[in-house]
Image (cartoon, rainbow, N blue to C red; front, top):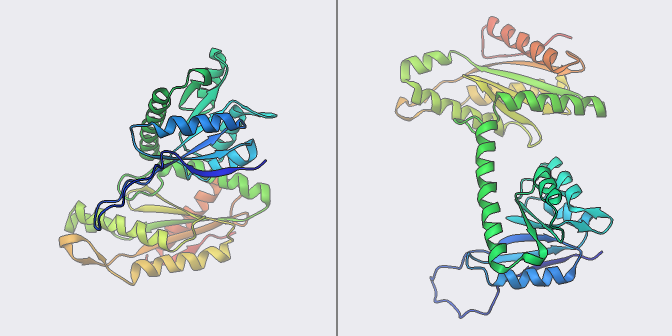
Amino acid sequence: METRDAAAAGADDTPARAPGADAPPSPRRLLLIDDDRLQYRLTLEHVRSFASGPYAVEWADSYETGLTKLVTGDYAACLLDYQLGPHDGLALIRAAVAAGCRTPIVFLTAETADRVDIAAMNAGALDYLVKGEITPRALERSLRYALKLGATLETLRQLATRDALTGLLNRREFDRILAEEHARALRFGEPLALLMVDLDHFKAINDRHGHPAGDAVLVEVARRLTAQVRTVDRVMRLGGEEFALLLAQTTLEGAVPVAERIAAALRDEPVVAGSAGPLAVTASVGVAALPGQADAPAALVAAADRALYAAKAAGRDRVVAAAP
């Protein structure tokens, strides 16, 4: 089926602005997934009368096209119909959520049964509207509610999964992601490497220069670690001065040069930590990979930890690879 895109709602002609005048706010992109052209036209009419700023409505008229668009994350919110030909909107929500989509979804249906309402919320929708009862005011209020709730949920998600100081993924996410990556590696027969990074003599920085200087060092270390790996790799702060990096589809032989680059990136340029000035920072790194050094997540962590302790015992500021 054909998809109709980028019909800007409320895009009336406006007089030319004087040079230097403030530009109007960019329209927020709203995705409508509905196989009914009439619903698309009604939505355009409703949105044109919104008082809360402009929206640009894009229409996807099939399950497949709608899901493809929704999982891009390019939309402020989504209006999703319950009936989509042979599919239903509940299945689409579940598929989008499974793909990591966090776009707020408002569920639309012609049914008034409570079971549909509850099923939509359980699947991941943030609000629910009955088509025959939709007015411009009701739709605008529902979108405003969904956007606000979505922003609140995203804030809570960040607090639960991110380290507050560095912005890196935290220890809880490390455990979850390691289990996921291990399962994926087994399924596709791919290697997975783990780097455990521990800053050398970090306590001395805190004791000598204060915790603000130590915090500045941790933030800069997080930035440098992230800069040395691919976007598909994961960088996490486990706590204190200890970090972990998961390198997808990477063998031990491929991970060691990455670890060497990380050690050099920290060693070669002092970290400027506010009034404390430039501070020399080095790290010890332990490297392990599966299937060569481990066959399970816990064993992989243990192998990388042993390699890290070996690096510390050998004098620090070095990389040690785990034995088979």
